[in-house]
Length: 212
Image 1 (cartoon, rainbow, N blue to C red):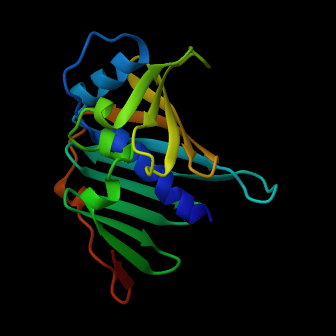
Image 2: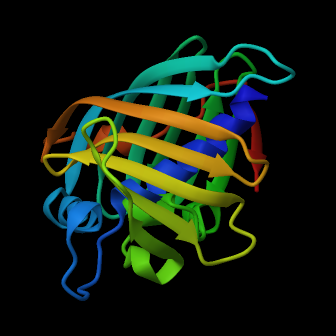
């Protein structure tokens, strides 16, 4: 289902946005842009479009919304179309809210991110510890970096991120079922002062709560 793929692809993306890199050898190209972005961007907000593959020959499914993050480990990812979903991490807990189902899934952030790319973008580690990094050929006017999980049970085969002028513009996530989800990021504003309530989540009255 789109909602399950949404969670997996999102965690992949989140891991990459919040991490802070360690110091390493001199690197160039998209790898250098990835590390620079993670070092020089403690917070940001913007818009996204996500395209997920349809099942059984169906057309691709598109969703869109907004995102915000502040390092370490706080982010908000809000789908507004075609249905409303919200994922909020407050640094300790991860909340996934499906408005249509009136259901909230609560997980420990450290367990939810694990060795996903989300642990890279929104965490506090060197991406080279959990991922093999490789610069790819330029495509669509973007400098691309490939991240392949070192853990065999990561649930993902690879992530590719396209940078322009030091900002991530596109991302491709290939999951363990050989399905690719595409992200496009727009109107990103760095170092945006985000109010604390951005990363707080209050469980709606009457919602079904699942703690994992």
